[in-house]
Image 1 (cartoon, rainbow, N blue to C red):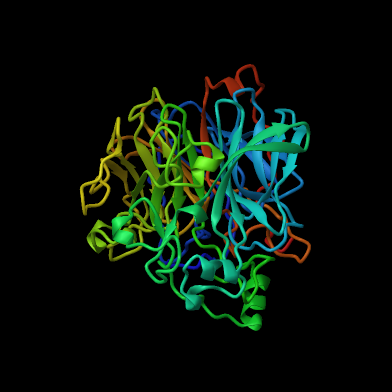
Image 2: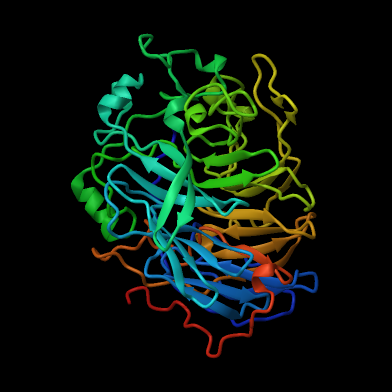
Amino acid sequence: MKKNFVFGLLFVFTFFSCNQKEKESPKLQGPDIGGLSMTRGLINKTEEATPGYVIFSPLQSDTTYVVNTNGEVVHTWKSAYGPSGWLYIKENGNLIRGGRDPEAPVYGGGGQGGRLQEFTWDGELIWDYRYATENYLTHHDIALMPNGNILAVAWEGKTVDEAIKAGCKPELIPKAGFWPDKIVELKPKGKDDAEIVWEWHIWDHLVQDFDSTKANYGIPSQHPELINLNLRHAPYPITQGRLDTLRANNNASTNSTVDNGGSDMFHTNAIDYNPELNQIVISSPALDEILIIDHSTTTAEAATHKGGRWKKGGDILYRWGNPENYGRGDSTNHTISGQHDVKWVPKGMPGEGHLMVFNNNVPNTKKPRSAVYEWTAPITEMGYAIADGGHYGPESPSWQFVAADTMAAFSPFISGAHRMMNGNTFVTVGAKGRYMEVTPAGKIIWDYWTPYAGYVRMKDGTTPQPVGPLAYATFRATHIPIDHPAVKGKVLKPLDPQPAVYKDVKK
């Protein structure tokens, strides 16, 4: 792994009232990662902008907002918790939202969760499930399945001894051990419970060439279906004084310690489900890779290398972004870095079946920039094609969006993108709290910088997520079409008065 995921980040606030006339896109000078110097509110709405609504929840907020294309808030929900990142709206108008459980132990870092909640349109909390113990914690993202179940990403704990027994080089192991990712499929029950009906553990699909006495010993270049356990750097040392300073400035989690830096092995930050293929795709920014696995397995098969529709058990079916991880290709084949929000383009939309991701830090560039990538994975009836000794393609995306003003559309973390029914793409520049509708030609036809943030604090005074001074940071926003079943029959008039905008960061 090449990164630790502690993000430092300062804020001031400006609000700009809605203006429906087309304007020049904003310009950002210098290292203003959070867009603090920028005008806030609706910046640009052209006649081409798609009718509908946008739903979002800033990382420091207990409120979920719905705005219309004029930038006016038309609906809100309140939670007892700050967000863990994700939120989704169901066809019946209910909100599914992740919450940062303040009592969750052990696990620290961006995307901490522990709570899965469902609210009715009118704000009634009808499901509040806690998945947070010393052994596991949900984080970052979920995927809603057609059968009503939920695929959730979670950390699970592995001790130093377990890591050594798996063939990890001792100098690469944090004193607190590792937190590899797993996926659990939850079937909601009652008001506060769920049944785990399927699970997958990345720990079962590792390879290493350090200790030949271990069962997972092998040459990584001969096993692209497995993750190289020793593809890491040594834990970064940190003093308690430095950690206290980071925490005081909201740059570290309440559960961060001097011993668990680097424990978050893969930092899986996105998950999506393809019902036609019965496959799951996840994003690991620690690997700079997109990974696809088979969901047609049983839980027992998912722990092995055989079984399921694709005959590979829980092994990696396809991976893209950084083939050097499995000993193939070179730095010129490194296409994504720090990426977020991977998903398939849904059936019936332009580009259906393609994959899309927000590429936070485009590799091999002189200046920092982000991009949205769309590409086609080489799938056949037999699985994903890969040449002997080669790496998974394609070599480059089939479509990409890079804003003309790269700094104003740059986000080193969070963010997202999704295809719209008309072929446009909705983009979230997460660090800045900027949401855009973009045409296939790359024209920005709707541009909104949220003026809303929040004042949620943990018991020790820190924010729910280690976002530092990024007041408007948003994990991702989602465009809701005007004819979406969730808003059918709903009263969506601008609230009067409008919610208070973010002004006083010391409140």
